[in-house]
Amino acid sequence: MTAQLRAGVMGWPVKHSLSPVLHGHWLKRYGIDGSYEAFPVKPEELPDAIARLRDEGFRGTNLTVPHKEAAMALVDRVDATARRIGAVNTLVLGDDGSLDATNTDAYGLVENIRDHAPEPLETLFGGRPAVILGAGGAARAAVVGLADLGIGDIRVVNRTLSRAAALADIAGPDCTLRAVGWDAREAALADAGLLVNTTTLGMEGQPLLDLDLATLPLDAVVNDIVYAPLETGLLAAARGHGNPSVDGLGMLLHQARAGFRAWFGVDPVVDDDLRDAVLGARG
Ligand code: ATR
Image 1: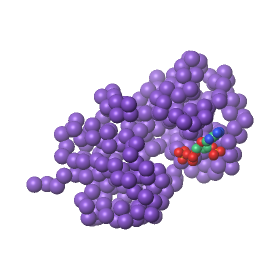
Image 2: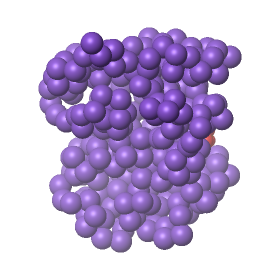
Image 3: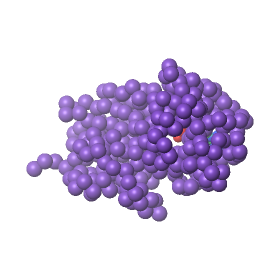
Image 4: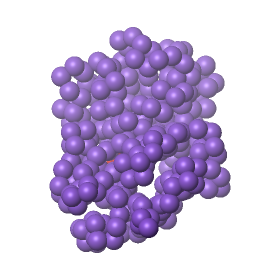
């Protein structure tokens, strides 16, 4: 008898994580004898928790706040994408017991936009700039994902300008990244092909994002990585303005695919059934 395939997510706190629901949905759908659980792990417990993965028969794990940076020093290999982002969210245990780490957030962000944008993404933006609001970890993933997609001009708008400027190094040689101050956020929208909010503004319990979309071209795609609420003020404003809009839930769903594939051996599908299962669990 083969042992059950095990994976999970480590975070602190972790009880609100939707990952067990989405991986559980896929395990059932594909008839896989596997498990995916949430593990509350305090920062000081992370080295032990990672070291125990092998002994406890895990195929790997996801990592969420606050472990995404600290885990980089606790694995054998960190791939190039994760190094650029400066954080990891997926660990995969090899047959030899070594641990590989990657970051699937850039992939998740791009695939979510691809799923909902009106044209093939590679041609959609036609040389127009992308505007990213925010300069934290999610913005780093957005810069890497969009630069690797071929967007050659990215404007990072952030309240703390120095944090935006610090992202220039990770965009790569074929992408020009400009840091823009928060006061100039509306001017930065002129001629943009894509707007992505990676700040916490608009999230439940956080202040609203104060942004007038009048300067944004009508065909620009608007994506909010916030998914609680599902329709943020930004997405409602985009809809009102006539722009195509993409909510943030799909990023969570798509970023999970690589881990599932590596641990359980099936490339899972992101579809409405999965989305409904995750939304149902959110209540
Ligand atoms: P994450 O790593 O999840 O992206 P983060 O590093 O806390 O989170 O980043 C949150 C982002 O929201 C930052 O860009 C932050 O701006 P600063 O870098 O200036 O802190 C932005 N943000 C949070 N509250 C904000 C506010 N009231 N006005 C403007 N930007 C805000």
